[in-house]
Amino acid sequence: MRLVCASANPKKVAEIARLLPQWVQLLPRPDHVGDVEETAPTLEGNAIIKAVEIANAAEEWAIADDTGLEVTALSGAPGVRSARFAGENATDAENRTLLLEQLDGVADRSARFRTVVALVNSKGEMHLVSGECTGSISETERGDFGFGYDSIFVPADGDGRTFAEMSAEEKDAMSHRGRALAQLPALLSRLFGLPTP
Image (tube, rainbow, N blue to C red; front, top):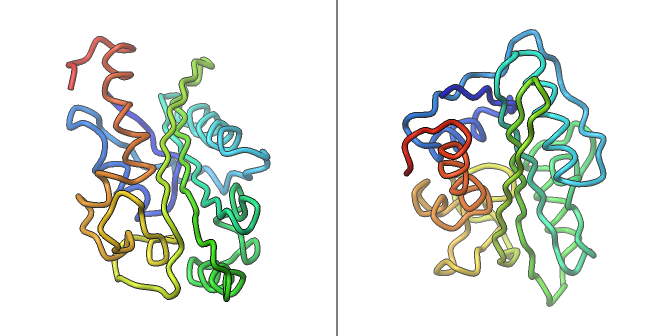
């Protein structure tokens, strides 16, 4: 079973590959495909945009995800603009810095991560799965692992550490992306008659 990954973020690609069953071969995004504009107002819409673009370019099944961090005190922001919170070409560090600045002195630091994964082929067949992880935003950055907002997100199901302080296996067991992708083996098995996990 081959899936073409829509993401060009090497850390995200590695995480997706780690979470897929062994009988799925994750192929890299085609070199000739440029940046895909995420113009939808929802995570679902952006995941579909990316998956459709890559499925059509590769003429194979494609997998794409869109993830948002929704902070209660910021009325759900940054949400769908999580990767671009501090600007169109913002770095992960710039996004984290801005978020911590906006929460300075705020008592309610509750938040949640949401991931929507789209599985699409070039014939227009489409399937969506999603995952969620509730938690809170730490006062300072902690940890050296992960990417994005991992060093300031403390999952409610954890032991007080941020995602960036956890091993990959620990994070996968409770993360939004882990929970979304955990649904894929059964879905792929149904679609293609592959081994059940």
